[in-house]
Amino acid sequence: MSKKKKIILAVVIIVAIAAVSVGFFLKGKLGKSSGGGDAAYVESVQSLVNGSNGGGQNRYMGVVESQDTWDVNLTSDQTVKEIFVSVGDEVQEGTPLFEYKTDDLSLQIAQAKLELETIANQITDYNNQIKTLTAEKNTASKDEQFNYTVQIQSLQTSIKQSEFEQQSKKLEIQKMEDTMSQSTVSSKINGIVKSINENESTDEHGNQQPFMSILTVGDYRVKGTVNETNVYSLSEGQSVILRSRVDETKTWTGTIEKIDTENKQANNNNMSYDGSNSDNQSSKYPFYVKLDSADGLMLGQHLYVELDEGQMDEKEGIWLYSGYIVQDEDTPYVWADNGKGKLEKRTVELGKYDEGMDLYEITSGLELTDYIAWPVSGFRIGLKTTTNVDEGMVEEDLSSDGETDAHSMDEDADAGMVDESDMQPVVDGDSGADTGSADTPAAE
Image (cartoon, rainbow, N blue to C red; front, side, top):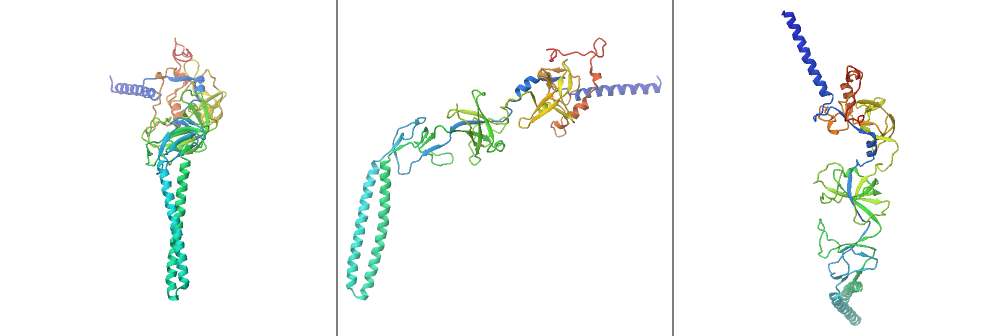
C-alpha cells in the first residue's frame, strides 16, 4: 500500500470516529435523561385544565376564635371563695361566675370605721383647743399674743392633715363596702368560659394571667400563624379563602385585618403548613382574618388559610399554565402529541392572561382531548411520546451557574432540532411511513 493511500485511509477513519462521536454528543444533547428516558412525557389537556384551579398557593393553619375576650382580674387583697363555672361552660350576661371571701373584709371595715371615728374625735379636740387659745389670746399682752398665734396655726395644720386622713379612710371603707356588695362576680357578656387561672400562673413573658377569661359568642374571627420566611408575603387587606380540614370543598372567605409582628410565638410545628419548605425552627407570628360570614363555623375549628388568587373562579374554555407555552417571537406554541405518538410544535392562539394564577386562555389550537408536554430543551419534532412519566425526558441543560436557563429553553430546543424529514422512521422501505408508540395517546 502506497503512502498516499495510507494517508487517505487514516483520514477516513478519523472522519468516521468524529461522526460517531458527534452522533453520541447530539443524542445526549437532544435530551437523553439520567433515568434513561428518551421520550416526551405528555398529559391530556383535560387533566391539566381540571387541575389548573388547584392549590398551588401557600397554606397556613388557622383556628376559629372569638372576636373579643372579657378578662376578670383579681387584686392583691382579693381571695376567691367559690367558683360557680367550669372551662367550656356557656354563660349569659348576669350568670354568677365566682364569689370572693368576705370574712376578713368585714373585720377590716369595722376596724376602718373605728379609725375614722378616732380621726373625727381628734379633729373636734383640735377645734376645741383653738377656741380656748383664741379666747386666751384676746386677753393676753402683745408680747404673749405671738406665742398664741403660733400654737393656733399649728393646730390648724393638724386639722387639715386629719381631714385628709379622714377623707382617705372614707374612700377605703367605701371601696371595701362595694367589694362586699359585689362579692359575687357575674358575667358581663354572653360567651364561653375560656380559662380559669386558679394557680395564679403567668404567661411566657412572666405577666400575671387573668383569673378568668370569657370568649364572646357570635362574632368569630380566624387566627392564623405564619413563619418569618413567609410573613412578608402577607399584607393587611388581602382577601383569603378558608377551607375545612375535613372537607376542602367547604370554604369561607375573609380579609386579613391584622398581622401581629410584635408578638412572636413559640415554635409549634403543628400550627402552620406552608406550601414551601421552611425552617421548622423559624419564628412564627399570628395574623387575624375578618370573616365575611361565619355560618357553619364552630369555635375552635381548625382551617386552612390561603390567599385568594382566583382559584375559586370557574373558568370557561382551556386555560394553561404559562410554563407549557413557548413564546416564539410572535407565534406561541406548545409541544403536543400529533395523534400518532410523535411530538410536534402546535401553534396556539392566546387570549386573556390571569396574572394571579399565571394562566393563559387558549382560544384556538388545542382541544381538551389533545395531549401536551412540559417543554424540555431536548425536545425535537418527531420525538416519541409517552404517558409513562418514568419514560419521559428530564431537563439536563444547565447554565454556567448550575441552574436551568428557562429563558433560553426555546433556543436550546431549536438548536437541538433535526430536520423533520430525517426523523421519519423507515418501515418496509417506505421512507414516508409513520409509526405510533404502544404507550402513546394515539395507541390508547
